[in-house]
Length: 379
Image (cartoon, rainbow, N blue to C red; front, side, top):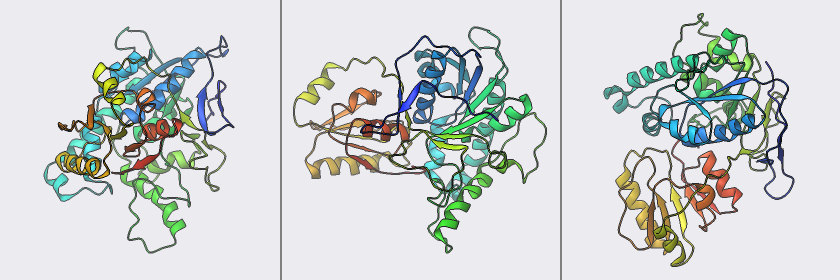
């Protein structure tokens, strides 16, 4: 397996070290131009770092195809990138995880048939990811055969596609997915574990791999005991997109695992509405409250909690409706906002309160804003 080179970014040694900063575009082009497919499962916060990566790779002359959920078609294409749809509904996946944060399905999820529905959705996505390596562009009809794969771990079939095609694969993610004694897997629940903390942390990664490895595509069968451990046993290169100044690389991670810094996209063009500008200027600097792609199990209860907190602390707030589409309120101290680039918005708030998504965390820190995390799962 090959480590894909990174030549146009650097880790700053100034304040904010560990943040991956794109240098201005140059005329440099690599002699070898690759067809690279990037496979991503998750929310917009999972997709956005790969938009930044794809843009940078394109600047070096590579053809980059970003394969992810259909809902992100416009988001990806608006960034000037090639898009390949793989199906799956990320909102439903998020709702399932909020209801079942420990990965063990609740009785309610079993009764509602959500487990079987999720399996069908995963099967659809696995087929889509295999097709993304080989199928023509669905819009232009331009032929495509992948020379390399970059993927986040929940896309599952990355290593199997790479083995079948005889091409390199490189994993990247915004939260830890490699065994370490330093901290547990974000999806593991270790509250009632009565063994050494370091051992429990380390084993939690294997447990999650076994519990999440699933699905099938039309390739050679993989032994049940080998499948979940393939990326680990083959030492697949892995890059984590967070700042080492925030979470340093654990001492027990080997050399093929890197922590390189946050991935920031080019800030999109944005013109705020007149009422948003007026709200920002009309009083003390507001705080930002938003839970992004989290699909709340009880949005009305969360809404009441937010409104009570805003009143009790006597602050002004800009609140994101998010994927839960919270109904809002008539308070003059609150502005309800839909989609708005954090790159612009966080320059105009005094603090950020959010669920701990990687992109929101990175943008808040980049803008030097105090951050309060309200976790739901895997944060």
